[in-house]
Image 1 (spheres, rainbow over the protein chains, first blue to last red):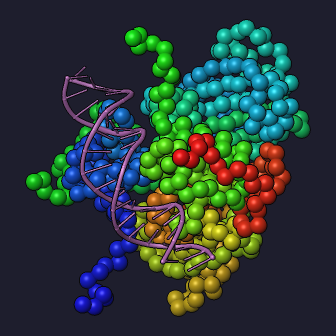
Image 2 (image 1 turned 45 degrees about the horizontal axis):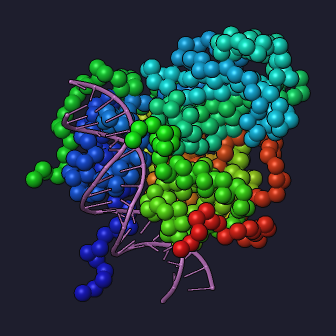
Image 3 (image 1 turned 90 degrees about the horizontal axis):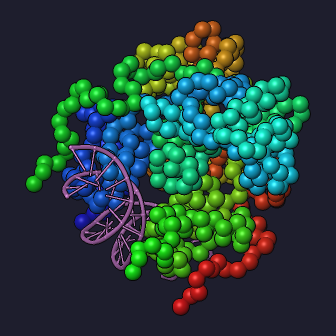
Length: 269
Length: 269
DNA sequence: GAGTGGTCTAGACCACGGA
DNA sequence: CCGTGGTCTAGACCACTCG
């Protein structure tokens, strides 16, 4: 018995092979918004443990191909949501554009880790304005703006979230913006963020940190976290719709056009 | 027995709590480059199954706090590597800057999915130049440049990778660049990329897609993938070193300064 | 070869969504 | 309420690194 031949290239983990098969199946037999069979059935169908199947689904979710919700099911996702970050510094000063929703506005001691980036003393007071980025009435990102009280001091202590936020933004607009510095990295959602994003804690997110400079010092620091599975950050001009279908936005109800089989690679029983 | 009291807020998954404890431990008792105890010991120490511990470690790795290597162990990671993407369009045309290494240069049919973005026919020929981004002699990213043969036609078929790549880049430099469009999203590493990055397939990566426009049409398309755990994308001016320690770069050998305890929250036996 | 992280299994229970 | 995905367990074996 020669050890040669008979053995294939293999060395490919089962979960990865499974992912590949699922990608093909999804692309050929499913359309955005359609539900997949449940995990137990899928695992059985492919002859793997549920944990292994879940590892494959996890990858597909991180790629933005699937969307899973506890209690509900697993559905095929539409194209990613473009988050326009423009080469220039809009995006903040200006709370207009719909699809954004104020969460709260507070004034408290700087979160420590951010003191250095904001250029303030360790426990200096800063205003914090949080808002939620929506897409198809689904939260996809949390944007958090920090402004040192030294920059915008005149904000009455007792004041509702909305008024407070509006006031800070108004004041901020009078500062001539010199420029900004921005970084993007991956992180995980803290429980609070996770809750706002309706995801379990530890969900992968894209963290965009923007530092706004005015009059030689840091006037504001924005820390925005976007769901890594559903968002794509767009700089400069947004990429045109590359790809085939002009159809198929984020899968909501009312988008099960070309069903097909019920998903199958093995025969049941 | 009233159901009130005695029960805590809980509702926090065990893996998340574990993550929190590990973060504190790492930050207070470890320094970059130091090794953690192995997974079996850690799991036992915290009284959880190895799978649960691994879920916590996974998160820490995604956050860039840990670095794990099969066969070797788990070590505390240093700060993330900044990948400068500058607001403007350098980065490509120009293979100088060290820390980058040519992988190969080929000419073949366009990968299908990219045809539209490149503005070429489905099976048109394109040049592909791949290079590796290094940091501390560790591959952290794969940058792949596609150039339609229609843009740079005169490249002899049989020619080594290096010469071919150099030729394409030289020609490209003669095209007056009009601008670019860029997007960032999360993806997973295909087996090939994973191999070049010395990671298992499916590793989370930051995918940067840049489209270069010249004379009204797409002159080149760059698709770069960076290890999500070790990289941070920097736009505009790089963020200055915010934080405390000016010390502690990526943990290589020769960086075990202030050891401490041997890690412990529970007593053994 | 010893020790490490990576993969996979089979089962259990929990928390949430929606009918 | 039932069905879904989310969490957790205990164990096994494999593939790699390094001394």
